[in-house]
Image (cartoon, rainbow, N blue to C red):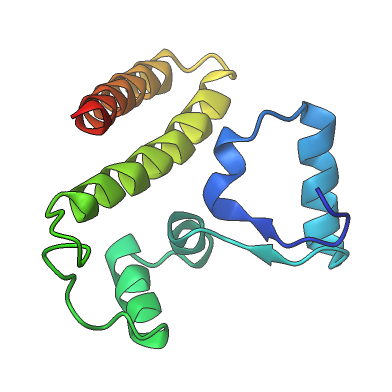
Length: 134
């Protein structure tokens, strides 16, 4: 990874990096050494605005204000379903990581919620894999 590359929040939770590497990325982002582009979910948490409102505003600013097409132009009507599943898996990964981090303090209720999120993620991954094999 390039030392000055933008840190993309969307895939941050799934990165296979050590605690020290995460801490360094956080320090780089805070000091401005590396630009940081948060995911929609992260931005909604930081600014305390509902996710769907942030999504809507992003769509308007990026020219994605039109509703999705029903196919990808090659007759595949499921391409957008697969994209939605991929996005949902990413969002669930972020929530799971956050809950698991809170559960390390010994909160069993939060740990239970984290396990529920993990089960939902696993279910979506199996659906995605089944779709990809068709």
